[in-house]
Length: 182
Image (cartoon, rainbow, N blue to C red; front, side, top):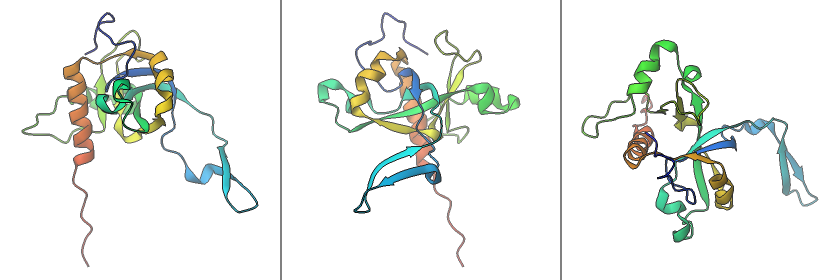
């Protein structure tokens, strides 16, 4: 699943990289944002009285869009938190989640599309493995690139990163439910 340390690109970020100890910024409660407003009624600062949680995350951005040699084509880097598989789903569903990574492009199943299973690794603290939670993705500014590289701990093998990207695409591709017509 992971590249061996000698094959990992230590000086570049790639889609599927695992980064440790990143502040989780997803799922912000909009009602908890406190705004500082100036005399012209403009918001000049904001804060939240919520402690920041840190966790391992996976890079979801396309490698070419965040490549330094391309001068980072986008303004932000998309991340998703990695959760303990034992806390992400019920014990009777863990086996199914673990098998759900490979999705046949000719016959896609819509099983656990929001999770991508990561096998246990000594650098990831979850003994039974983790799941990348696509439903909690967030982004950080491209100026965070060097900070993310410093915290990079693992890189997926290219074929596994491709499986992850395909599953992520299917997660967002699902058809929207139609509203009942009156």
